[in-house]
Length: 204
Image (cartoon, rainbow, N blue to C red):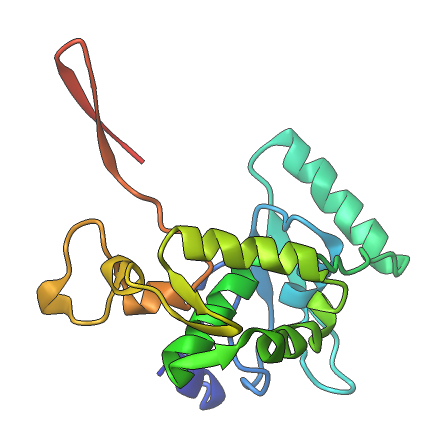
């Protein structure tokens, strides 16, 4: 709905998350206002680039600083961007991502051969240097926690998978995770009760 209103020029302003997850062809965005400086030059350019998004367009934006070091960081970001100095992308073996991909693959296909999935995951550039020993340690960890089971060279979902992720809300307990959380790598800010010397406090 937000994207459609932007395309039709029916919205004067939109407040969104720091990732600005808007479609590429969103219409004419005149200015991007960032609340406090982004963490990197690449993220700064990504957010700024939502405005003037055309071949001949010119990005337009500003950063609202709250503290003195915000001003210094903002100046540094602008100067680095002008000089074309952008951080190199980091390629690492994020095993939490691999584990979720594997469990999602098993959720869809019921089972898979260990060697076949290893070829799939190492076929992606981000995991092209994932060693078989590291991969097998991840498999052993998932198996030890009951999230998957290994039958020879065949992998299947383990008994604890559906105890952690409940897709039926009617049978979801307080410690279970929702289906949508399975595919998200963004952690929720959990609220819990802290008790000390008989006094209770709510913390995030």
